Amino acid sequence: MASPLIVLLDEAFVKQAWHGPNLRGSLRGVTAEQAAWRPAPKRHNIWEIAVHCAYWKYVVRRRLTGDKRGSFPLTGSNWFVRDGEGDWAADVRLLQEQHELLREAALTSNNERLIRGAAMHDVYHAGHNTMFKRLMRDQ
Image (cartoon, rainbow, N blue to C red; front, side, top):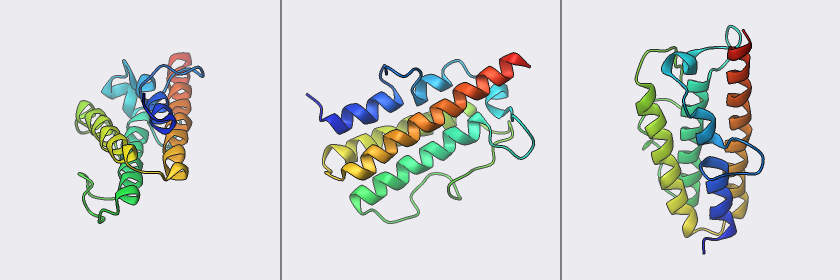
């Protein structure tokens, strides 16, 4: 049986959760055009949120393992501009890969605060994505 922290990480990202869509679920069926939609000028979009979450999974994993900075596959940090140019599917795969790497690191860590925080971060942004999808639908 998986530890409660791994269950929490998975529930926030990909497993069925009581609260509604998890992060991966909030991206299901979203096209590149929808992912690039902004609720207002100079606001983040679903695509940017997905890459931002991938980046923070990388940061948490790095903090758990003591790895050096500089190994994230994209240049930059925190927020990455995504205006519909690029490969949406590749960025979703990046998010999935970073989750799997974080999950692997969490299996051997006892840093409950960081792992719990990573899960809460996923749920927080899943809520944004869900809200953005409703705003798009209601336009």
